[in-house]
Picture 1 (cartoon, rainbow, N blue to C red):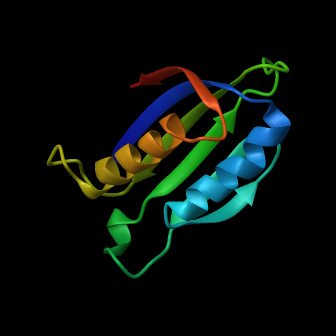
Picture 2: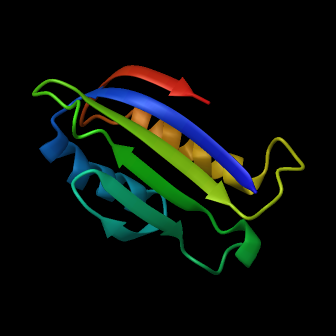
Length: 115
């Protein structure tokens, strides 16, 4: 199972972040399946890759530490594919989503830590 994570500190309120993040994930070709104030789950739309390569994205927003000026968030991107190659489908989608978050014009990135 391929699994990639990244944590962010963004200069945006939690109320503004959630709808903007939903839109960002949709712009990346993902179907948002569920969202609440501090959690978003999106899946890749079937059809372009095999079932085992379909990616799931989970965004965990830390509502307990959010302030009026910054919000912490972590993303987990995973699929059932074994990561036998460094440049696998899950990694490619992880890089796309990470870059979109880091370069979004809707907030300023304070910190990013990929794991």
